[in-house]
Image (cartoon, rainbow, N blue to C red; front, side, top):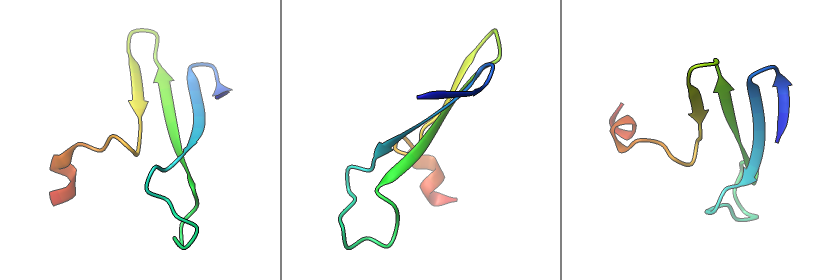
Length: 54
């Protein structure tokens, strides 16, 4: 994990379904933002099921 700016962090982790034959990168990016009152997490592996219908 690295802090990009004060209160903004980025990290990467391997996608659990990735295989060498996939056309996309093994690692996916996640972010955290701390605005002083809340901690917001942006995690592509924890997408709410409601968004799949959009």
